[in-house]
Image (tube, rainbow over all chains, first blue to last red; front, side):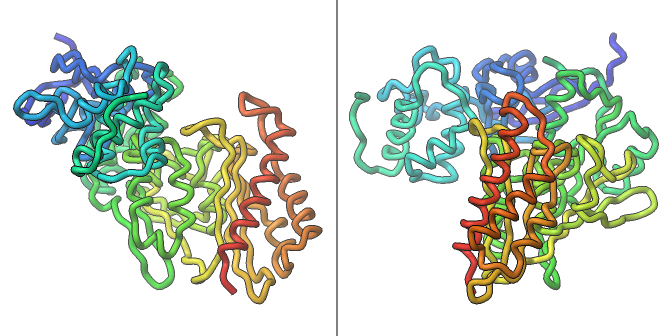
Length: 169
Length: 288
């Protein structure tokens, strides 16, 4: 038994209540991945630059590599695992990323979609510039971002019931 | 990368937080948004034995106005600064500056108090607060004291804040309605610290500058209030000759490091360029 102080935490993750003990220094990303086996949020740079670890915490997009699990005590969290429609079909954003080829290797995708999810909640009808600034905390090293922007536009159009551009160029 | 071990405290009042800091001295650090401190802890550039999370203190949130002064409590996030209608109306330069800091995720958690208190010369808010002649409320075991932003910064990461004190609020005198303002920041990419940046607030009367305040970011160990440059411009019509003199006066007080953002001489010149652009934009926005 280690003598490291254990801190009790309670969170709601993707609608499910979880209760655990954590070390003070446990980062939220490690708590999600290692304690809860929620491996959608990725560990990229670990220095709060790349955004691969982005999750939604109390309605805010946060980089879970730079938040202690203890700080998230009582929080409501959503990860990519919680974004599909309740019937299991793809959400508008997930569908958009597939339709518009918004990914290549896919490493940044969970963070990208989770960030875009919060962005569209705050701004359901963003301009291209607002989308680009909105995802500026997420790095993609494959796509050049063009199709990610289109994917988010696709999702916004679908959610708003406006015309959807059919396929990526 | 995982930070070293520490004991986690989550007080619910300022008094409780100050008491914890006072009992542990140098070994304790307050945690606000965490986006400076947690990366430093991962790199072992900081290894506090006690971390005092200020996130549970309701008193440290909020923006209010009273008798010509806007008070922003320390745990107010950059996101909240951007969303504030009061600030958009009375102090729009804060929103303009916040939008140039880091990226959306970081702005949801990063706080004004953390940005001004930690003494990182790369941070944007300290220079802006000097430009606005803000003061910081520092609360310690013996009560609160006010320190002007222009007197707060001593060297990189060295400030007037004592280890047992917490910066609890920032007080900003509201500039006159119709003032002009601009924050110009040269950076290599989104999320970067400034190569050089300048904050300008001025008022105009019939084409003449009636008051002017300028501060510079990340071109010395501390933010720089450009007092002489501000004085040179006051009373002028912003004619090319006076602007040239003021830019030279501002460049003369810079002492940037040569680093990945460029050699020192370049960063000094860029401080001048940012100041000139900020001046032009501020003058354009000013009425009167």
